[in-house]
Amino acid sequence: MLMNINKLQSFLLPFQILASKVFLLWIIFAWIAYYSISSIWLDEAFGRFIMLLRENIFIQIPFVLFLLSAALNLIRGSKKSFKQSKIGYFFWLVLPLGAILFFSGFFVSVTQRQQGQRIVGVEDIIDPPWTKENYEIIAIDPGLPDRLTGMEQSGGIFAYEPKMTVRDRFLQTSEIGAFPPEKLSGTYYHILNLGIAPGVRLLEGNNLKSQGYMILRILSPGSSDYFDIPPYPYRFLVSLEPEKKTDQAHGRGMEFNLEQPQYYVRVFKGEKVIAEGESRQGIHFDNFTLNFYKPIYWALVEAVKDPALPVMHAGLVLVIFGVPLYFMRGFFRFMKR
Image 1 (cartoon, rainbow, N blue to C red):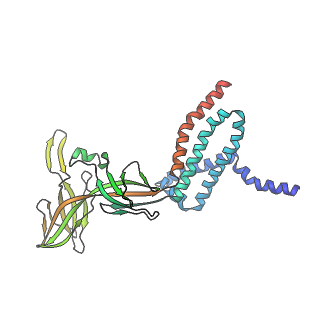
Image 2: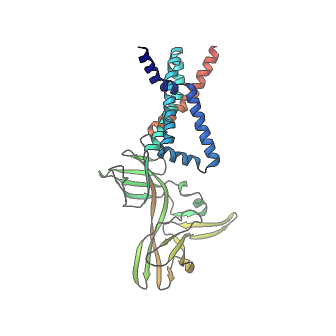
């Protein structure tokens, strides 16, 4: 009989240690110390921590022990608090329960989250590998005016609200914006970036050699981007050319026509600039001519499958409500004394 009791005590000992307040405080202190030291000696400490938590079992095990200890301490503390006061127990419970839910959801999110990014245009298909659903892009609305001043441009493209309309296999349409993400069939989608893709024709003499849209990041003020047309040994550096330039008290004003944009182009052959100029009349170099036609818009879309996101949201809501409830409980106990 005594041997069975000793075996039971040996079996329960790890749970008693995990459920102790001392163990919980020590493991919290260890995490704080680890992250503080990482922040001092390593760049992007949080990003490295997320990567290790996702891939390294020696980081995952201490985090799981922290969650188990927190849950067991909550159960242990609940017995005492519930006996003292049922209402006080509710006021006390919300904050630690919310914290445990949030950190549990955070752990599952980091270890199970799937995501991907892709640049798309109209008629492209979005089909993340983890889902059987796919969506055809039928429209991209940049949310930008046809004409954009330099001051508006300096506010960034997300001073406006880009939208992308997609259609599923049942011909139902949905809109995807920048924020908040749109949830479709368990996957979250949102626009990370937006840009313009000029239509480009390359002619050798009168013969068309290449034609298509070139994805460029040139909507930000003062930005330029380049493209190549294989197999030709040229590189084309492109920036938006303002349609109007006016002198103003605070500087020079510029207006960009996004409906029929103009570009300033430099043509490189190796390291040497062999031609440059505005795109209105085409760019002539060697025996070639580069012409531009009406652009389309492209979007960088991120797809994320995160089963733990609702748990994290629920935990965060409980924490927000739990903080004032916790202090109210302390205040009432003080007044009662």
